[in-house]
Image (tube, rainbow, N blue to C red; front, side, top):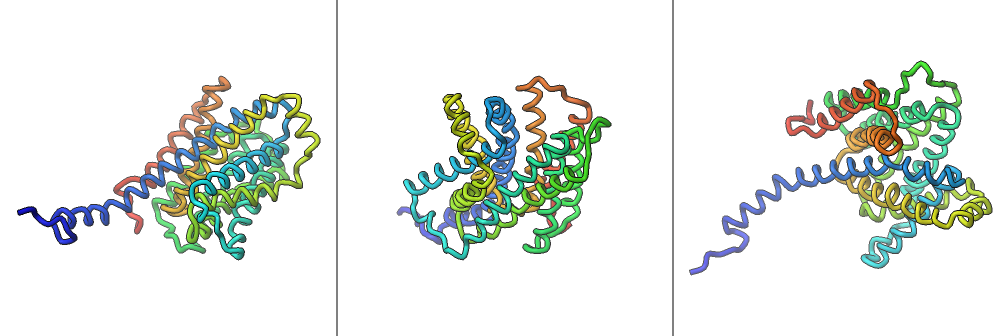
Length: 320
């Protein structure tokens, strides 16, 4: 006589036990991997930006194209696969105004202004003050624990970013305007994790990402000179391919991955893990643009990776 495979069978009980005990761990691991991949895609943006800037596009034009193509692509994809994901309540648009305009547009505007007034390395390290803002705001708004491990990881990641970008070099240029724009860019960058967390309580990662870029596309319009953009595109038709690649590789893919990761782990942890972006950017400079890797950069990379490992070690107890 065949044994029962119903709800009370030993096999079914074992399956439920495994799901309950391992399901959350698997989700968190996939979330960490997603954020690492997202940061890695963001880290290679220089490949596209340098090429397109050389062709004549302005930085804000690249930001706008990145936002618009990402928005249109995701809307079309969602409409073709699951239109229910496009349904959002009007009052919830405040979250997407937060992620799209207050975060994406604002931090890009501030970051580009910082780059124009201080060195790229200084601007980059100021942008990566964002985990500090995220960790503090998450503790206040979401009651996330401000653990010893998280504090140590935060310090290691920030010090690592400083060393990777070479901000301590005696040739580094500093001024008040650049510092203000740089810190504001970090704050704006942090807002994505905060507003995104609220939005993810109601909607899927695809929905959040799509509407983030819909509102970002609207918010970036005042910064665009359409005659200039069209003239550059007309002179360089092949640049359209690069623009689409920029949107897919540094917009669609990483933002979907990061938003997914944000839905399964704490905002503070997510922002610290994303600190591997400047590490990848540095390695991209070495491999693609033949830039030199200093001892400081090597130490910085080790510190950032140590921070990521600390946050995800099996022995890490969130109560510490």
